[in-house]
Image (tube, rainbow, N blue to C red; front, side, top):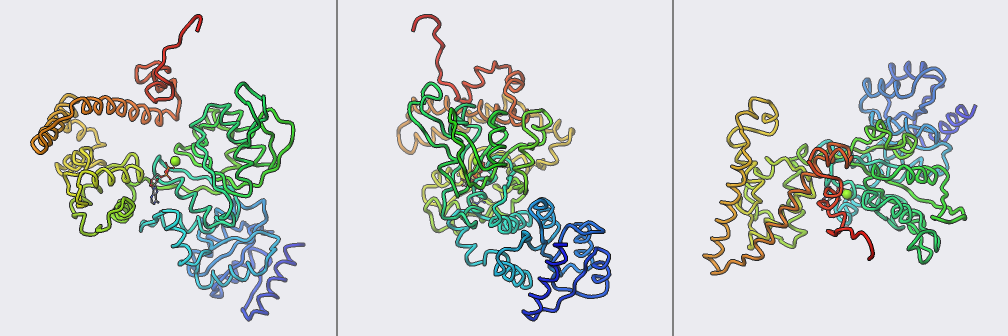
Length: 492
Ligand SMILES: Nc1ncnc2c1ncn2[C@@H]1O[C@H](COP(=O)(O)OP(=O)(O)O)[C@@H](O)[C@H]1O
Ligand SMILES: [Mg+2]
């Protein structure tokens, strides 16, 4: 009866510290206590003999919302403990309780509602890692959750559209974890071919494949004791997934072509911009690996769902770009225009827009006409009364009559107008570089379209190519994954 002993032991320890304590050995007893007394703090084991701890927690939160709850959990129930945090528990502690000082600290923090990292310290970490939280409820919850999970050493899965800050968040988690002084290494699983990714992660022995001219360590060795950020985890091939599963389960792996079992103590944070369950359903991602990675999941909201945070983010990017008179440098209309845009590239796109506008503005004062055309256009469309959400309905789509030719003509007119203005100012137009710029834009258009359609098709290259009337080879070429080279058949 380990549970009984833990309960009695904790009671004795807490009484010694002058807390008033009541105990319950079953769910039923706990319900009765809750209905008859007010508590400031509940220590709750999720495994109860007669009822479910999470249900009890929900009841507690509904009848005594101000009472803090700390979950006591065995390793096997970490997942439920994380769920308990989502339901409003303050924190969880792993059983057996090893460090009683940690226990007392969590208790006293819970009683004064202070989260793991004292605010002063946390702010310092935020500035060093460049993680802006903002005011939205969702982001505040994510920060709170990150603070609770960071010291725990559990695997975390971060989900969010591209540019929402998955890597920024994971660097923050690392910086407030016990591993902060150890390496943080980010690997983008989508940026390597299958065999290169395998060697990047696990290293290889000399001669294990053509080109392996010497032994090489992989990140699981290099980042030992640190944090490994696996970006675009859904892009890892099934064979790499098997190896990841093994190292996560056993803490051991082999170098490519190696026989020596190597140990690794690494905390993995994985990121995905697609709903990875869909990949599981399609047989492209192993369910058991997802289960391993997804002990806790943090879902970052797209920027369009946190437009209140745009001013703070813009401030941050202006300062980062070296301009300091921020407050005077932005008119309300600029903020309004930025807030009306849909931000498919999220915070990364916002950061680029700020850099672009500052470059256009030259004197550091951003005016509406310094913003990129896409933002001006989107603002104009909305001023005419068609907001993004309204535009989803079919009658509005009809009203909008998006005419490709009209858009291109408008672009040509704006662009040439801009150049002629520049000619009037400087007496020169560098036409060759203008044409180069247009050519590069063509590539950007292609890439943007491919990436959007590919995301919709969950990264499936073949169906994406089909929908774009391309073969997969030209698709890869347009994505710049292959050199623009014609394969030579015959003697070389
Ligand atoms: N919370 C944030 N605070 C400040 N800057 C951010 C934040 N999130 C994202 N950014 C900016 O956006 C860029 C992209 O972030 P990143 O974490 O790489 O996004 P993702 O991995 O989701 O594509 C970063 O380089 C940073 O400039
Ligand atoms: Mg990223």
